[in-house]
Amino acid sequence: MVGIDLSGSARRPSGWAECRGAQVSLRLLHTDEEILSAAAAARPRLIAIDAPLSLPQGRCCTRDDCSCRRFGIVRESDRQLRKEGIPAFWSLLPSMQALTMRAISLAAKLRSVCQEIIEVYPRGAREVLGLSGRSRSRESELCRALSHIGYDLPGGRPPSAHELDALTAAFVGQCHLLGLSRRLGCEAEGWLMMPLTCSQ
Image 1 (tube, rainbow, N blue to C red):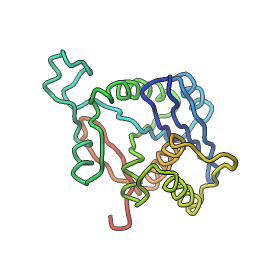
Image 2: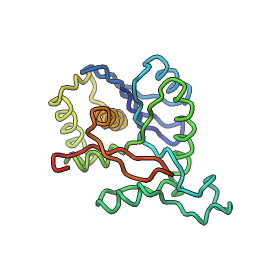
Image 3: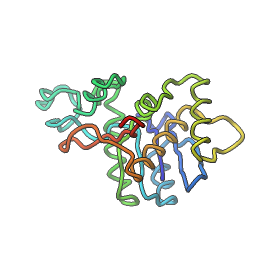
Image 4: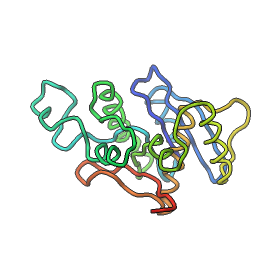
């Protein structure tokens, strides 16, 4: 199981979490080549990526001067997150365009080493699990929660926010494999997977 907290640029770090049973390996990667090499070495059953893996239905590109711009910048999964009170960025906001296009391209390449790739949203997952926020206290709380359910987190330095997002992504991927996830979005745009809660 692999979780990736993808950044919009290779100049910024992307979080990587690799889980084999209870054992967890965390690190920061930068380029697509580094991520592809790590995935080829891991040969995971599933890769969960924290980034939009599709464009809004009808869009062919991110350009604002293209005729496809009339179809907007919002996907159905984005709308459903907002309806549930979960903060989300529209997938084609100017600040999100580079990330969305990088994620779509990288996911296509990753399918050469892993057939099942899902889109996840760690911040939203933490919201529904009652572990929202990015403060150090919340990160410590997330570490304790993941340790409590059986993850053997590496010792030494505390995980970075990117690594914890990647680990949360991997956790949602595990929920998905166990049938403990639900999907947001639509068939045409692909699905965003979220963990089930006790009330669902």
